Length: 369
Image (tube, rainbow, N blue to C red; front, side):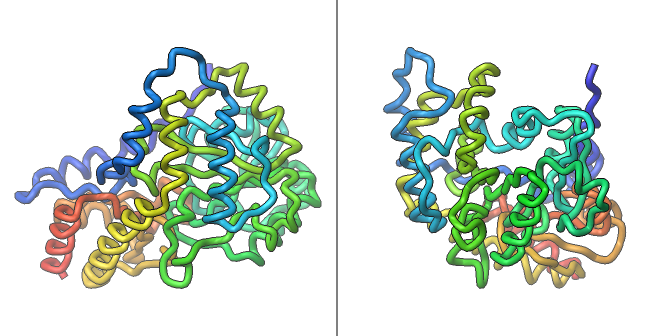
C-alpha cells in the first residue's frame, strides 16, 4: 500500500485550540480559503447550468475553452493559444498532485520544485513513484540529477512566499529545462493578485517574452478559487503544451477526471467578468494594508510577499515558537516548516478572513507590541 506523509495541517491542532481560548475568539489566518460571498454573476450561471443530465466532457465545452483562451489574451497578454490547448481541472491541487503520473513519470525520474513550496508538488512525485528535489534554479543541481529531470514546477506568485518570478528568471528556467527535455509546469493561481509594482499583473510562462511564442512542453496552471471565491466549485484549468495536451485529455478521460457541467458554465461567467475580480482584490488589499504594520509592530519582518494571498513573516526564530506567541493572542498562522526546511523560521499569514476578524487581529497585535 502507498503510504503518504501525515496531512501536515493536523499538527496545528494544539495551536488552534490555544487560540480558541482567547476571550475574543480565534482569528484563523492559517489556511487561505476564501470567506467572501461568491459573486452573483457566477452563482446565476451555476443555476442556469444545473439542468445537466448527460456526462460532461473531460476536455471541457468549446465555449469554456474559448473563454479560457480569451482570458489568457485579455488578462495575461498570452497570444496564440488554441481552444484545443486548454482543459478544465477539478481544482488546481488535483492537477498538481496527479500531473507527474499523467505525464508518465516513474522510478528514476526527477521532479524539481521550488525551495519553499506547496507540499503537493512532492506528493505528486510520490504518487508517480518518482523522486523530487528542491531547487529554484536547475543550475543548482548536480549533472547526475540534471540528467534525470523530467518535470520542473515553478510557482509565481509563490505560495507561501509571495515571490514573483520576473521574465528573465522564467525565461532562463524554460531555456534550461528545454535543454534537458523536461516539462515546465507553472502554477500561476495567484496571478491576479500582484501588489505594488506587480499590480498590473505578473508574467506567465506562456508569455512570448518567456517562451518565444512556443508552448511546447510548457503548462500554465490556474485556479478561479481565489480571484472569484469559488474554492467550493473546484474550478481550475491548465493551458499550453499542444504536444502534451491530447495525451493529458485522454489519460484524464480514462481516470474520470471531469469538471461537472454546471461548474463549467459558472467558470465561463467568472472568466468573462473582470469587475468582480477587481472588487475582490480591493478587499484583499485593504486587509493586507491593515495587517502589514500590525505584524511589524509585533516584531515580524515581512519577506517577499509581493503577490498572492499571504504575508511571509519571520521573527528569526523557530516557526513553532512564533506560532505559540500568536496563539496566545488568539491568532492562528501557518508554520513555514510545512513548506520545506528553508521555511522553518517563517510563518504564513493569510489575508482570507473577514474584515471583522482582520480588525480584531490587528487590534491584538498592536496591543501586544
